Image (cartoon, rainbow, N blue to C red; front, side):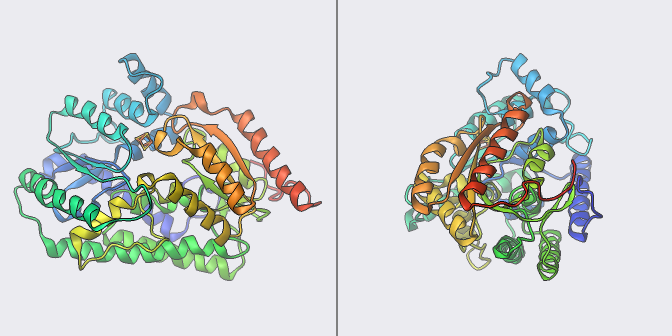
Length: 433
Ligand code: SF4
């Protein structure tokens, strides 16, 4: 967590090194003869990619990194100049703009061109359009894994078999063709076992938020925690080690009764919130401070489950390699129908004893934003906990109205105060940004 004022934990240093090493590998992929796969975060098949010794590139991660590094506005302008409409998801435009500006990745080195575009389709139609655009540029093969939507929160045998059949018939042969080697099933199983270990530890981290105070922020801090498991590292020894260390650090915070770390140091918990929707990346630290300065701690969020929903029980299972990959893809948050999403949020509100829940509706992302007002109403009815609604965007700074969002957050927290009849002073951390 590069912006934290405190000295870095071992897990943070490890993650930083993992990212640097991965981008260094990508920078010399062509000279090392390594094959490169571009693929998306939800429904990613990282263990399978690793079993073929290929290197993944996640365009959404590059886009959010560009947002955090204040480069996305320029990239989006570049894409709009090339004819992409203002309404298109800004991750797509950021990625296209980055590509047209030299394809320099987050660590400042050039990203290699893909040898394969692996389109794992988990509920977002934009993914298809995005890779159509990339295919025109790169002229490399595309392989698609069609993952059926879960309308009622159940994975049927037919759905699983349909995905497994595509893995066998389309995805694995495409990877074998690109790499010139057969799938090493034992290596895939070894990686899946490492994933399971990391997932166990990540769930322990999420569940630590049941403590009062919560030792973690499960949204602003949580996006750093999911970095390795959502991106290129699931199924690696490094990722397993990262989550083991992170869990240990969080358990130490619990023992010391400490709240989460923020960019300005530890926060004293006054409000416990659940958040639905992705964060804004262009003003990420400002956005976080709107909450941390007020002592508002996010105890659970859905965005941190978008690349894998583990706290409802799913784990990668090395004894059924293809079936478990299918179940993973089918269970991604954006692949779930609205009733399942509402149930999940209601469970978070109850399990983590939240005082309130907030929806951050981002302009770009229909996969998240559709139905959020309805979800808000249903959640209020189900839980009796008051909801709030704010609007921003992922990486387009034109849609982050700082004063407006800050006003709304403060009014919402004051409303929570009024509801519980609190007379405590409003500012909790005593830390100036
Ligand atoms: S619309 Fe949402 S899920 Fe789809 S690519 Fe954009 S950010 Fe991702």
